[in-house]
Image (tube, rainbow, N blue to C red; front, side, top):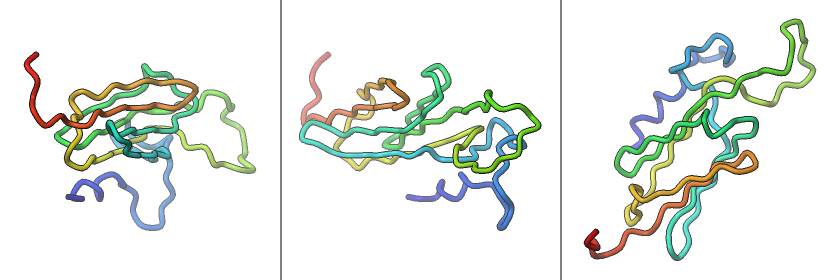
Length: 130
């Protein structure tokens, strides 16, 4: 279901996204995300340049994985006038809903060179005794 999709954008029509005015709870941008499936599972890859793994939060709710955090704008002084502004700052959120057949509880995350990679194994037919 896509009922949560509408709740990720909180800007009235026509108003610009202003990360500096946003509260920490309201995501203002969505990072570029790839999701692909292979023989033994699925991979979620999120482009998060300029963040540390400590800045990221991953939560799981059923088949849905939410990756959130915030990117700070630490390098410009307050008197700057932008000529080009393509980098997003402030709170972000990426929500990925995997199809059935993956064991999201066994997902493993790694963060390297500005990319978060989450490997989700395919669910096994029979639960193995642990």
